[in-house]
Length: 262
Image (cartoon, rainbow, N blue to C red; front, side, top):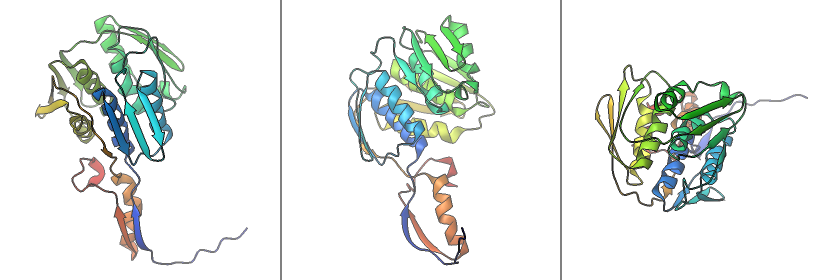
């Protein structure tokens, strides 16, 4: 087979794909609100489907129709002996482990063996320090804990997913807590995304200084909105304008906290 490629200049408008990072955070925030929330502009990647599956396993009702997801979660975190399928999503696994450690019941998170080759040492140490159950298998981990509010120290040199996971759990607990980041802090932009998303649902989470995150009691509420476009994926479209094309890229939030916006 022969393929003929003809050079041309492109002209037109195209929307950037929705941000997977923001979709994870808004879906979890919707469940934490305990109310009915509607999110549009959702792209059903395998990772996002994993997060949706895990929300359902923990008791949230999640309805997907076209690019719209409705989360109704008065029973979130009330499932008995839940099993969460994280597929191959590292974000899903690391976001949900601290929430599962709040339930004071056996919870199993499973996924591919490749997923469980990724480090979970931060949560293993947290569990060991508090006497929680943390039993790993090649394709799963089974937990039991009763995580409390308080002050937690986490290295800033690890994946921001661990820090975000702790923020989700402490927001769920709903009492005064502090996360102290041990410098260097390498992924601040992703933590800003987590805090921004949770504030949409009424959470009270703030940086009080460069390395300190304070979580305070707050009344959660419903939020409905559209998942913003992804700046890193937009770059592949916008680069056509560097070689003589005229491509307008839409669905981007000019006030976005995505680190790739630069």
